[in-house]
Length: 634
Image (cartoon, rainbow, N blue to C red; front, side, top):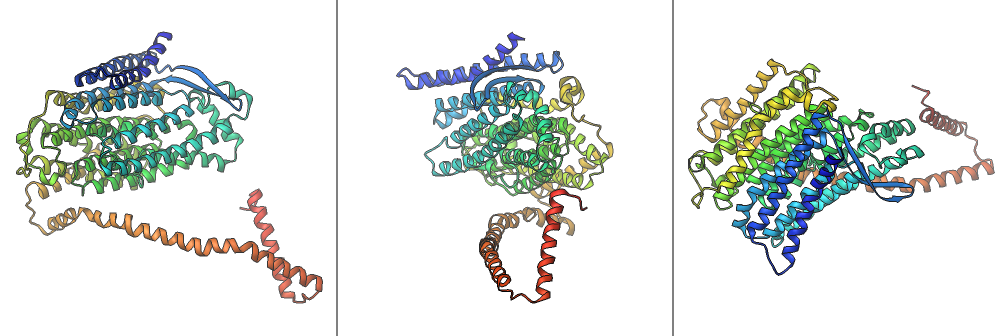
């Protein structure tokens, strides 16, 4: 056990040591060659991947036995703060995923950075700092440490979004990304401080790591029993809202495409469920606490389904490759949030992993397309690349088929989600998810036909990418094809300690219906963007509807123009009349009381009607106080 814990600490601090070495050679006169920076960073990622694989094997072998170790840092107001690790099934799978993706990013980035020739050393320094912060977040033993490293990750994401700081748009967008992230971190920090205060009211809880995840259940039960239910629900709601903002859910989804000025390889990590799922991972950790207040899960349901549908609708009107990838990732993350809202704990984890591989595959494949065509990101000026870049076309098809839910890894979690919703008779959410499947297939195959089919519309002859990029994509193809099958059949042995809700059994009828729904999305994209041949009146209507992006342009104009103006008018009305009345209310009450006092003293109140009104008002006031104070009247 001690050896494993030592290896975990070595794994955590290896990227930090790598970043320090790269910074040293950047500051001293002796410079490392460019391949030296790449080699050191890649070796570090491979080394951490090997340790994370050992940790994952240990977790499976000992049936989810958690390893924990804490080092005290300081004591504030008799509350000890710790830096520690908590390695269980959940953290081991996420650290394994981190190291796997960072190996791919290191391999893929080398050729890309050679082409751009900007900030080569700086890129790998930032990349290793990001890996270190992610390790400290995912293997954190307590809530305070998790929030601290969420803030560190917000700073690193800002640095990447402003990587090309010479561009004014990079500076503007990076500030907006940072503001959104810090808002989420601040909300989570306030919720953590409130929970810390109420969970450490007894001396027994101050001897354990501050808000440690190993005893979050008992701390939650104590707080729930000792607090007013409304205050406890408010704390849980703050955690939910912070996680929603951090995960770029609607209406905070623009966070993703605002980071589009980051270098393409790391942009693929920013929009992956690895980064978008930071808030969701925190909800996984706090699940025993949130489960005590079921009402907050309604927020997750509504937010998740709105994000999934609106993300898909916006993706089908985008022509920029980065924006398509951004909204694809946002839409899939919305499905994860929706699933967690229905307390399908295992299925939401299953979906975030399967969707993550598909999103990364499509994102890196489109990065190679940009690299091959001279950084062309507008799909209107692409086309006909299937013959020039056949491997990229196949890789994109595999990712699109998986995310659409036809076969491969994407089929299994979607089948479980739809089967559970059908069994629970949640037909509204089931219908909305089927609509989302239709839209997902439509915008993915729209992108495929516009990029890889037809005639090439670019001005630069596409060139073939290097073997390193191809190798990185091949590595991503393997889990995209096979991970869903492995997890679906061996989840009980891999995640035995996480089964708050088992995967369930998919329904064959629902699976067939979902397949047909996705196939309709493919058929519509095929007829509009490939054959461009639609004859019947019904199909002409669908063509006009799809060409108009399902009226998404009108909706976006409404959201960002008319709706914001409408909200501004409501606030202006509220400020002018409601707040004005509330501000003048004390003065009005004072005047009325003074008037009545003077009249009573002068004995000038002779109206029986006026006295009856006063008594009725007094009785109504006392009845209201009695009701809200005791709750006797029902």
